[in-house]
Length: 254
Image (cartoon, rainbow, N blue to C red):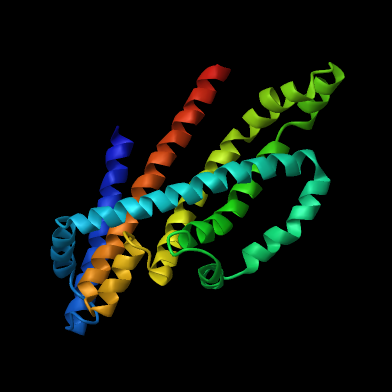
């Protein structure tokens, strides 16, 4: 309990430090157009939260993030498992993953805009960015199983299906969950970036772009802060799941 309070106090101190630096910089700049003060952004955020269109935008972005994340998670786990079981599959997939990792996010979004509807562009772009993360984590988790344990299972002629379900996948679980947490944060960043460019209806990124075109800097900050908050909340919830799964695993072992 004491450690938790101490951690919260340090986090609060860090936030206050950032706000203090921000306030000082805004005072020096003395231009709300260039850098609005924390108070101006807070007022803009309160005004934004009172609008129904804002919550529709939040819902639209959350739906896109969830779609991209779930598709990345499912396909990433499947491909990671297959790559660990069949090295030839990994050899075939490796050049594709290298190309995806090396391609700038902006380029992927712009290319996708030629092919897909505006509402699908952010999902497709986020999937391409998050899929390699889940794939790599899943494959590493599958390969993390103690070779001696696997050899023992083969000596005792444990069926391949049982080795996969009872040994390999449980060993990979923590790697997969860690990769999923990283992929979720990445999905938020890419989805919002895709929304800024593609301009779908009901999207946080569209709200950001609209405020920029209106030359409302405080509004841009308010939309950006909302994006950070919802991204942080989703990552926090997934982190709780990861911790709970870890505790459950320890209890099962004991």
